[in-house]
Length: 436
Image 1: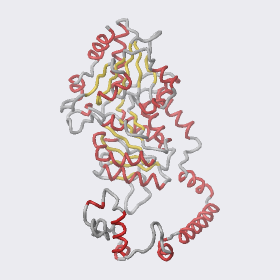
Image 2: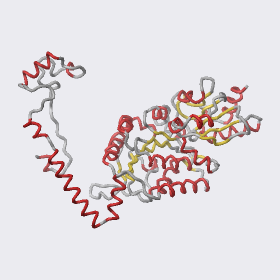
Image 3: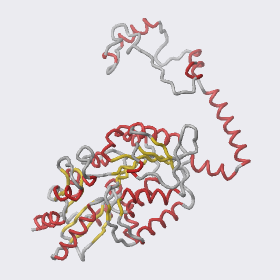
Image 4: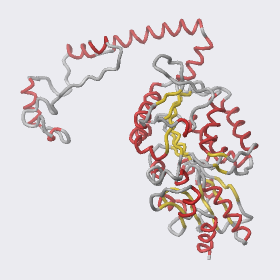
């Protein structure tokens, strides 16, 4: 009663005894991880004075706990209240139903696709975290249900857009939550928002700090709820902050989590596609992984733009059958393209595959996967500034991987990329060795 009367949040602490009532096992771990057993159950019933059979609930206790009657009354009152609201504000009622049902605006597909086409037609060499912010700006105008936030890193994650308004204790009209330095709390709260319905929740932190939120993201995948996470500063490319802040194994961990959709775009177009698909995905979480450093936009046909949604596609191709396939994601796509140009000039038939989302690619039919990665082309090199071992799935044991096999170091990004072998020279040398 005291807690109800106090407007402040209240924490009520109660002390309990594990296995209460069990005469021989209460207060010990013996009643935690194993059944009590028939004899101890009988002894416990006797000690508690419980004379009813298994799963038998006395009527007076059931009636005390049952909320059916109260719930039915509350539902009827709500239905009556909403019917009156709908009669007085029909357009707002339609919008309310749309949001609560998780439906996107009628013009969503047409306008979102046009936004992506316009980005392809107007190249910009920007960091993918900035491309993410631009996507928020473009899509946010259509989505009043956006409920954004960041774990005290909004200026770095670039997750606030012109329509963002802070949610405050005395003003619930906001659509952006400043979670503070609490990645787990942020992610768990977003799960609750998603389960409530009516919102499209997104949060943000550095990719390295997803470690603090891992179990909440896993629960989002397990519960099949929408939870969009913007993970920036995605590799050794963040530079001088050093190995404590430089993610290595995190992308592989996210990709290996069931029902998690993970995207690492290479430019503003792939970034917008990733955002569009994350917004449309209602049955699981999405991890959108973005760079700190600027990335070159890649030229594409309309067909290639459409194929981005398939998770992997042919970005650059050769005449006829390729003798070598370079597979890359994010900031390393530009590197793969430059290496392919040098190899092509030397007479090699090279294909470059951009693979922003391995899980999306894995869901494609066998014919499409074969068209991108022909099974009879075994000379393959995967290039990603993340843990190398993940990529054997796509290059095979006879392929090569230019990736990370250790933690990073503290130095400017360009020096680190050279130190760890993310250079045109190393890709070309690896290709020549593989195809010799």
